[in-house]
Length: 231
Length: 284
Ligand code: SF4
Ligand code: SF4
Image 1 (tube, rainbow over the protein chains, first blue to last red):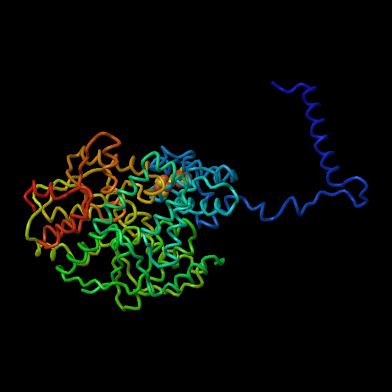
Image 2 (cartoon, rainbow over the protein chains, first blue to last red; image 1 turned 90 degrees about the vertical axis):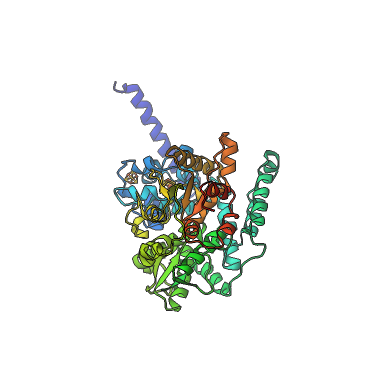
């Protein structure tokens, strides 16, 4: 059915209203400068870079090559727990749905098993794409979809930065404290379970009590510092 | 034969018996492992999650140290360390402009332990060292993700259906059963952050192993072994099914067949007791 002339008129009126209110905003009452929208403020060049280009650049993968065959999602072992499936993530990046993608659980649930990328007919390594999305999510003030994962990675890396190797006991302590939910873990019994697991490991000689510190910690610190620079 | 050896953090911690058994069998086979001096953590899944440059540079420092030793090959038993090191080599070759601070110009040949043992040490020299065939031990070989994928990086040829471990264990006399889950993910990188997912994935692997009649799983990776062994009792209590499936490192079974004296010490570090099964087969 086509729109009636009345409906069309209504639409027209609405759009005229929108334009005039915009002009008012730009001019300001009593201002004698010509009314002009602040172009530089509204259309920053960086904001015009499509989301897919940004993710392609960080990941080194050509996001726009995807033609939605779904092979990635069909082989992914974690789809049952994801809120957006891998092939949907890539389509949404193409469509510029930045916020939806960056706040999804999926990017934090991906186990980086690379089954998807291995089977993709367009050779897109989706695990690298997921890395790029996690990095972007942390940088862009969006609340991070899975705090636990990002806290874990930080605890792990701070151990590497300090000692040059992972000091598992220290890393787990930092992770447990910072991941939050310690009280919840006391009540649902997981804290005791974790502690028991740790104790058995210690008994079996698998959890050294002191950190294994390397001589070249200075070099490792340098690597951490350089990694913050643009390459 | 002399090669560089990168044990990685796991083989000094949760995967201690993998390191011990690796060193023992290599010694017996006449392969001298020279530990990379002052090696650092490869950054594992955390570094590449956070920052590609960090991940590549951390692994590159180890390559530079290995090169200094003058040895051509570097053997890496841990699948995660192996993959991270291969990724670093790949990135440095494909996109050198992204890593201006990294001073590595190639020259180290990185090998996973299984390929090293199969291809460089060779099945013939292993055959000569076998003292006890693993007769009657029904096993499935579990390769996991990271020595296989992504094949453009790992250079794995049979990445959907690898056979290297199947062949090796068959030579040792084990009853190796084919199955379709050799390279399905066990969720290793999610073990501390999303434990429930790990229990789901490992439960499926246990079910599929039992379905084909296996009595144990054999791995090449300390993350897989840790996941399948240490979390198995949680899977059992969650599902109400008592799995009781020992999870071996392939080097432990090599050690058993080759009559290494410390086998029981390694096996006592497991959470699911493998000794009971081996006794029932009169292998211990
Ligand atoms: S397998 Fe590749 S081409 Fe197919 S949907 Fe996934 S990303 Fe797109
Ligand atoms: S790498 Fe991530 S998205 Fe791809 S198959 Fe594995 S878990 Fe799924």
